[in-house]
Image 1 (tube, rainbow, N blue to C red):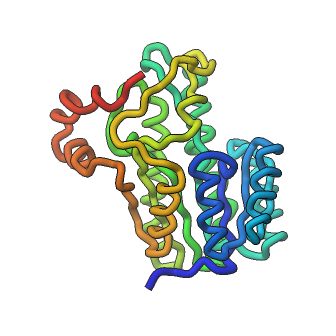
Image 2 (cartoon, rainbow, N blue to C red):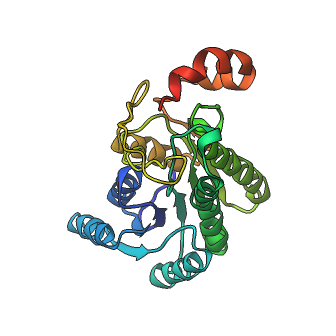
Length: 266
């Protein structure tokens, strides 16, 4: 029987745009209390107002997930405000579009700081509360977490690192009542591509055409909500071609030669 999220506290990072915003609405409509973590103070206020107008209890917290001290303080405030944490959704993330040879080391550091260490910091700080509630950690990965794509070396590295971390964490927590779910969406219509970094750290101004079947944030949020209710360990969203994962895993040479270049465009 699927788990109920009524009166549960759901913490979402990167909560005020795209998939994060859609998740806050979906879990909120199921009766959850929402703690939103984001960088943009104005967007947080707007999101909280929107949720409250729908009768959803919500609070916003301004914090950069790559700031370890800031996350420590923010998670403590959330526990004080809500008394418990039942679900943590590590959604905050950034990407880049550049060849490896043109990508400064600082860009690699920045992507690891947000995508990997941001999820690590949030999970580590929330873990005592999650152990108490027998909660669930949901971490957003991507197709880049299992398949090599051109122009995404730093992004792919950060997503592979997440799988390594959270697969180990799942094993450590499996007998302690805490679930760990990895989510791999395909291309989704969000601003992450509009804000992609160049190799020198600037913002890519060239428009990016999404490849393959493009999902919308509300559809992604719905699939994640259903998967969370079933406490799945790995969720490949419906717009991820199962053949891509099959070839990347079992026929890597074929994938690299005939498929990868069709997916990872500039």
